[in-house]
Length: 294
Image 1: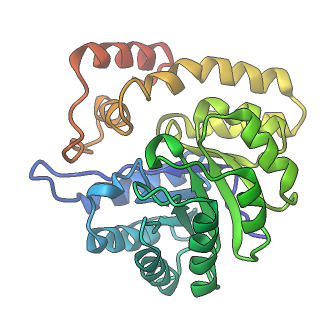
Image 2 (image 1 turned 90 degrees about the vertical axis):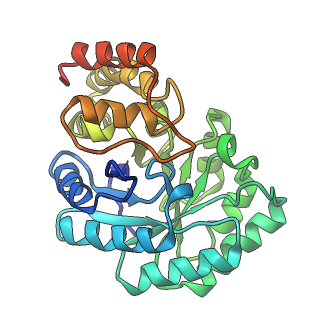
């Protein structure tokens, strides 16, 4: 059984003023996250702005982060693609450099039907048998929903071990849990759904907010697992305004603004993403101050 832990941080990619990747800050941020509640770093996912990264930049990020957190946190590489051939090649390279897992997003834009989705993930798993795969279902971004019945079929493949479920549909998450074995890890893909996912037998969260409140999220999850439901609910409700304000516009725009307010030199997002509008920045700053994060 593969154990990625409870709090998985979907790590941002820092950029310099000229738009190049700031590998030095990435290294510093990765080490900071590993020391503040993160069990596993998900590198070059949506929050890491993977659509605007080159493969060369991604591979360098994998290695920089790997060196920064060696022995302290695991690394899952965002090597998914809407091309099966490309996803296989990227995942094989991630496996070769010794990363702990791979995040495989539902193919975007080309909208394959369920049999196509099954064969896509099956082909990647068979071509990369030595690296555990986490499925990533986020239909709001990909235009296609990975249905629970398809997830259940994929869960029978030995190295497909988990799913990041970000459909926003709690019934769907429940059906996935109902159809899959207990050792198939179900992670919330939304911070605000974490507590509810735990209640149906989920494992934890692939988090954006953990950049800022990783220790709080760990306490919430550990409290729930220890039967301290009131404490878990208290933490969830305290953090709920942060969960929502971090998605006041496209992720990771608000998160990068929050990190910059804290003094992190993470730069701006690459186009076509943009800076956080001033009126939204004021609301973000208000929430951060209320939570004593500034």
